[in-house]
Image 1 (cartoon, one colour):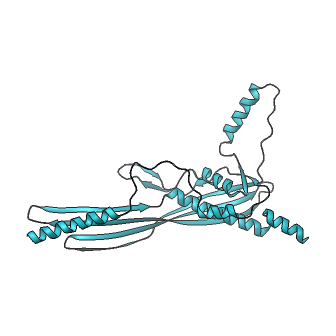
Image 2: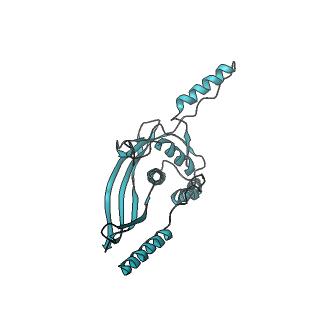
Image 3: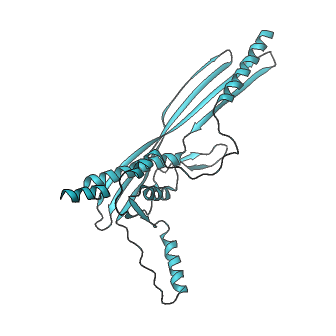
Length: 263
């Protein structure tokens, strides 16, 4: 009996030590910070740029999945993907340096403010709003849950450990539309997997008839869905830029200069 208690205490100590070594976020010590650009965005920013950014408009980039997910410990549901994809796409287009997004999501607010300015100043006229050359349309059209699941685990004499993972997938479509003709110039589909992982160790053993020793530790990590949406969006925008160059819809400044020198 004493040897079993010693083994149980030793196993418990090992469990605590192993869990203490696990990487986990520091609680209540993180500060707010501006999101750093991704490696893909840095690559786009470091590539050749056009002489002038093209004015573009984004009216709506909606969640078209219609999917909801339950909230833990709460009897309610929330949408599976972000509802702020329009603002996200506008920022991605601005950060590339290829496009100059015009305010369209809050257009009514902008028009109201312009009316207030003109009403306060007699005989004053504001310049006309700039028109977009390209419209970006599309939406998040798919969110597949449990696309891939699996794990591994082992248990012996009430002591065990396990690891599980799950993969979801986000799919979105993005198309560029010529404002003057209404022609869809390019259309791109992009996907991004959302990875979740859980690691658990535990001890469950009766040390006597009425005494139960139980211990559990572990952690889980989940990729933020909004970041995955942004990554898929950046990939789609990059594909639009490259396709536009290949089809001759726009050129980088270096390409334009090289074409002039050849002629």
